[in-house]
Image 1 (cartoon, one colour):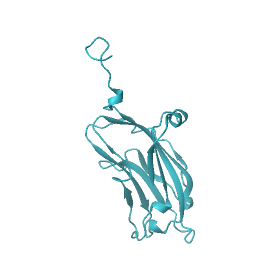
Image 2 (cartoon, one colour):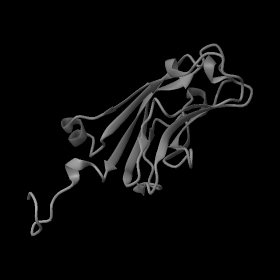
Image 3 (tube, one colour):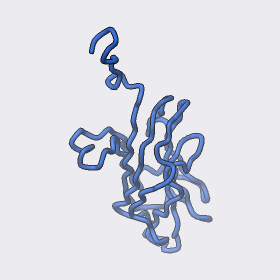
Length: 166
């Protein structure tokens, strides 16, 4: 799994997204029990600070998730949120090839979330009943995020008629 800021050129070409999270089936640890979700948070995704704004998100599957040895494994969903609301930005989008996968998720609701306190972003992969997501042997995607860090020193400016540097 890789979370990284986009270059200025990439930000311009993606419509203002500032960060990208790449993930695939290799990020799923072995030995996860049946009916158990995997949550990636601290160490994989950033913690947001008070005044950060999540402007928008998009999920794109380049390869739907699947288990080649089990055609009956037909549901694995992805959610993106934070420690307060695990589905705040993307809510249980079907990512499994046998479950009518949704390749592109462009949510209209829950955008422009202003954090008034710190919050840890998290990505959740849910398994279907009776299956282990550790058995998935294909699947890849990425999530684009537009995060505005309002308290960033580079965004602070002196008032035009005030004292100090202008």
